Image (cartoon, rainbow, N blue to C red; front, side, top):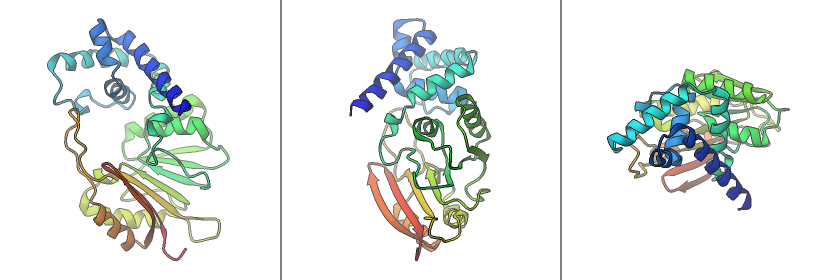
Length: 267
């Protein structure tokens, strides 16, 4: 609890410092220091997203104007400064639930699909450079930014690849975490994705657990700032996992999210 409060104070301070630089008036700085806005602005600039990709359909014109000008300023800032700020506001305390980027410590060659900045905060906290970690994202901007993060912080033995979960280019891994990716995958392709995940695991063996951990959205979480998004049907997902030759060993729901751990049958 004490550590979490410390993380929250550090994140709040980082947001306020950045908002102080970007805002011209107290009202603008207050808006910009809001976690939702400053975090998304950092993501947009670092990952080369457009401001229009932020789900801001309910924002009044003035707020949208403030955010647009703030992003223009951020584009001209030192990227290293933005990297540091992003790591601080995306501290591990924000992802302390079981769905956070908690990479299995027993895995020797884990693969994280759909990583993002929050995985970097986890790596900075407890990455073991003796094992090989692979991060995969379909977006070339995201993959490129992850590489820059890793180089900036000197994180060792981490590989970043651009790839589609429907045809995973990485094989022989002993742990796969799929983080918030399935709901963005066409429903007709999800059974294929499960088979592809299973085939990416290492061959059976005593030292290879071959586990898959899935985190995803099960329904739309009401939020005034978010537009509707697709979701994963839990029963369909369970059936697709079993059809791929996998056995579900753990499952839990938390609000609008589902957490499932599976492994090969008979292992």
